[in-house]
Length: 247
Image (cartoon, rainbow, N blue to C red; front, side):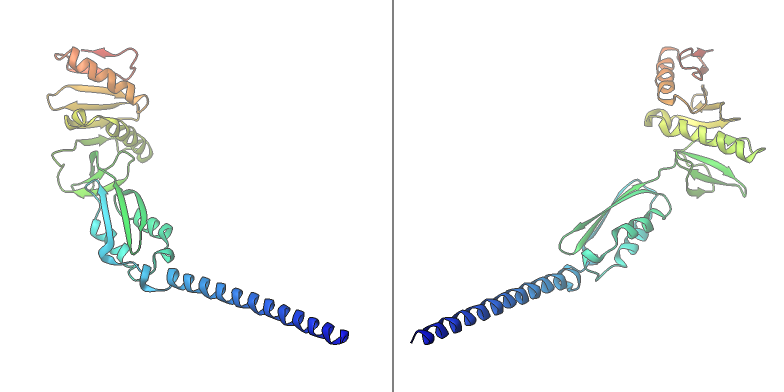
């Protein structure tokens, strides 16, 4: 009798142990299946696939070919958002002409938002072939024109020494790129015989001598003050902003 009871208890414990094992296996299998389903839905199903109609491209500037950017983005059409290589896509867009910066954001469930910052030209630089290179403040060429655009000054730099000419151009662009819009719009021509001799001519014929591209914000403040205080001065020299000269 006692041995029968022990046998029953042993059988009961064995059955319970088997049940626990199978239950653990069942839970593990179900969890794995759920995770596999989530992975498939997220990375492989069309639920989160990029829809070209849900691509939004916003632009800060006027020089970027938005159509080219949109074409690069829509090449990813049908690819689930988590699998889109936004880093590689950003590098591809940054390599396009006139793109200064780009930010790409996934907009769930099936879109992308692309925010562009364009390089804006600040001057036209004469080139061989009677054309002008449109340059931004960092010396990056963003376009070409047959004539100087009405809203840009032209830059004249010495071409006798290519390296010195490039330094002079960089100094001139540094000055132009820092000018406030109202003053920049009044510039007609820019010359830079050397990197330390940047000069600009205003629409009324007055000349501002900036010297080098150093301390430009301070030089601008001094120049603006003198333009207002001495309207009859035809030359304003702020190359040494602490000791400006007018005549």
